[in-house]
Structure formats: structure tokens, C-alpha cells
Length: 97
Image (tube, rainbow, N blue to C red; front, side, top):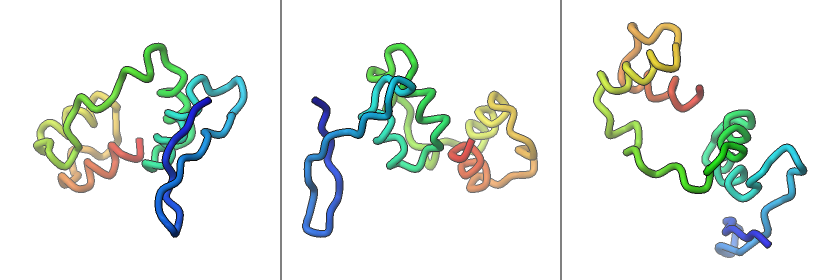
């Protein structure tokens, strides 16, 4: 059984992760990623990847990256218009990709 904490008006409560069926391997991770604002398709790709529960948390948040590092990552992901973007715009583009 998988549990996670969810915020309720009277505080945090442990709740079971919803079963998303056979299309999602790791329901708990999928829900956590969706709670963080990740798109359904990206959250599903991460939750379904091999070793998914062992990944994440190794890189600092984008806010701590330099603009050059953000630009390089945007280039890796082939984000259009990256050369004209500010640091904040690069962060937003990376987060929504």
C-alpha cells in the first residue's frame, strides 16, 4: 500500500496514492510530480522509467543555475527562442517543457 501526505485545511493527512491503472508504474511518484506542477505526460514518462524512484534531487533548482547553464539545458531540449530569453524566461520554458 502506498501512502503520501496531502494538505487539508486542518493540516496534513496521509492518503493512499490513487491507482492510475496499468499505464502508470509508480502511482505515488506520478502524483508527487503532478502536485509539483509537472505535465501529465512528463510525470508519466518519469514515473514509468526504469529506476524512477531512485532518480531526482541531484541537481539544484533552476533558480540556482547560471543563465549559461540554463541556456545549455534549453539547447539540449531544443527550446525555441532560447537565445532571446532572460534567465527567468529560460527557467519558465524549462519548467513547462
